[in-house]
Image 1 (tube, rainbow over the protein chains, first blue to last red):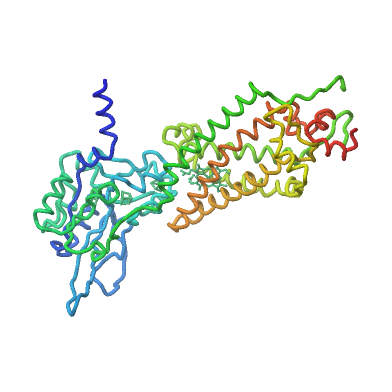
Image 2 (image 1 turned 180 degrees about the horizontal axis):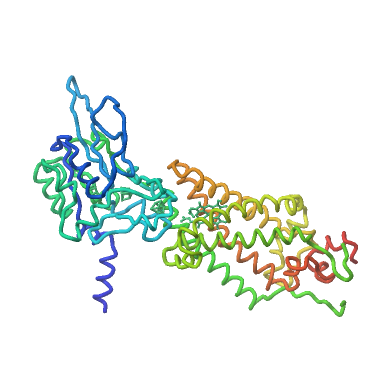
Length: 269
Length: 205
Ligand code: HEM
Ligand code: SF4
Ligand code: SF4
Ligand code: SF4
C-alpha cells in the first residue's frame, strides 16, 4: 500500500516526467539549412504550403504558421569582420513546466503524452488563445477555425515505434530523437559548452547543443512564463474554491449559532 | 409608496433587472468554475460541452455587463451617500455578530449593502467585464491577454467570497427580505427593524 502511494507520487512528480521523457537534440552547427525537416513535418501532418513572398532571404516562411510546426531560422551573426550563418530549428519545446498547459481552460485540448511531450487535440480547443500568452517561446499558432496548431512531437508516430518525421529526415544529425537523458550525454560528450533546456522550465523536451550563449542563437537566456500565471495557479485558483466553500460554511454556521434577524410582526397584519 | 400594510422597496423594473443580473451571474460563475478546475469540468458538460459553454459564457457576459450598467440608475446614487449612520453600522458589524450591538436606524440601503454594491458589483463586476471583453475581442495580444486573465481571476475570487454571503443575507439571515426581490414590498415592521430612517422617511412611525 505504502509502496503504491510512493509510486503514484513519483509518477505524478515532474522528476519522473523527466526520467521517462523523450525528446530531440538540436545542434545548430550541424544544420545545413536544407529544410528537409520543415517539408517532412508538413508531409507527415498533411499540412498545405503557405504562400509567401521574396523577402531577400532564404528563410521562408518568415515565422511559424498553423501549417508550419517546425521552422529553420536563418540567423546572420556578425563577429569581428566575419559573418556567420546559423540555422536554428524553432518549434514547441515540450516544456515540463508548460505555461500553455497551465492556463488552458479546456481540459484535454493540450495534454501530456507518455513520452512527456505536449500534444494537442484540436477538437477540444475552444480557441481562447490563453496558451499563446502563456508560452515563453511564442509557439502556438491558430488555424482558420481558430484552433491550436503546433509541434506535437509526432505523437502519432512515436507510439508505433517510428521516430519523429523531422528527425528521421535530417541528413546531418542536427535533429536527433531519443531518451532525453541520453541526448544530454551525447551533447556533453561532443564537447558542447551548453545544453540548453537541461533545467529551464523544469527541463525542456527539446534540447539544444550550444557553443555560445542562447541569445546568440536567438533563444531567451533564461526562459520563463509570466509570474502572474504562477500567482494565479498557486494562489488565486485555490482561493476561489476556498472562498466559495468558506462563505457557504460561514453562512450556515452563522444561521445555526447567532441566528437570523427575526422581525417581530406583533399581530400587525 | 404604501400598498395597504406594505411598503414598496423596489420597482418592478429593479426586480426584473436584479434577476437578469443574478441569473446571468450564476451562469457565468458556474461555466467559469468548469473552466477553472479540470475536476469540475463536468459542469460545462451540463452546459453542452466546452465549446457551447464558452459561447454561452461570452454572450451571457454581454447580458451581465448591460444589466450591470442598468443597476447604476437603481442603486448608485444611494450607495455613494455615506453618512455617520453608515460608520456606526460598520463599527457594530451590522448587528450580525451579537444581538446586543444594534446598529442605528439605516437609510434605504445599509452600509454593508452600499459596500457590496460599490466594491463587489460595480468595481469587480466592471473588472471582470472589462477583462472578459479583452479576452474575447483581443485574443492575439499576448501581454494584454495575460493581464486580463489575471484581472478576470481576481474578480472571480472576490465573487466566490462575496456572492454566497449576499445571497445568505438576502434570504435566510433576514426573514422577510427575499420579498424585496419577489414582490418588491415589505411589512412596516420589517422596514422599521432593518431600515429605520428610510421607514421614517416613508411616513411610518
Ligand atoms: C462576472 C462574472 C464572470 C465570472 C464569474 C467569470 C468567470 C470566468 C472564469 C473563471 C473563466 C475561466 C478563466 C480561466 O480559466 O482562468 C472565464 C473565462 C472567460 N470569460 Fe469570464 N467571467 C465573468 C464575466 C465575463 C464577461 C462579462 C465576459 C465578457 C463578455 C467574459 C468572457 C470570458 C471569456 C471570453 C473567457 C475565456 C474562456 C471562454 O472562451 O469561455 N467573462 N470567466
Ligand atoms: S486556445 Fe485552445 S489549446 Fe490554447 S489555451 Fe485556449 S483552449 Fe487551450
Ligand atoms: S514551448 Fe510553449 S507551447 Fe510548447 S510546451 Fe512550452 S509553453 Fe507549451
Ligand atoms: S516532431 Fe513531428 S510534429 Fe514536431 S516538428 Fe518534427 S515532424 Fe513536425
